[in-house]
Length: 141
Image (cartoon, rainbow, N blue to C red; front, side, top):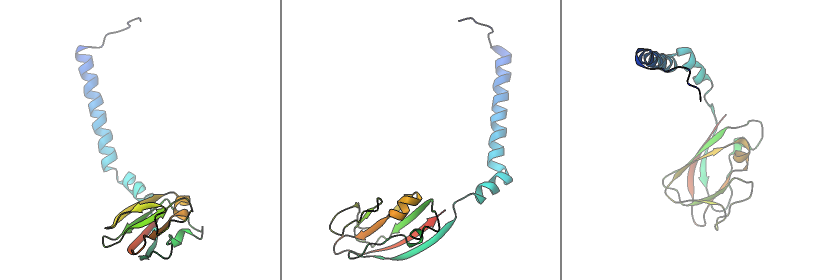
């Protein structure tokens, strides 16, 4: 390997100071740029499709707003209230069962984030046998 130059001393100190000043300027731009913040705010997920109710052990609950296909959702937030009994859910369009099929949500409440339009359409939830669960769901696109 051929050495072409050695950077040291005052030149290196000046370059380091310049890089630090550039880093500071970029940080201020990103943190304090009103136009950038407005763009970011304008592109934030928009909440639509609020749903509220009770999950029971005799019927499957789905996110109704996703079932028509008229709206594509980025994700939904599912809040199972802290007074809820245990539940089961699936994301692959198969049916969960009150007797134990599906991913378990333990009693006492949980929050689920379900990403992706197809997963949201396929999301199904049911209370385990003998349980009920108050819930809210909010879609975002």
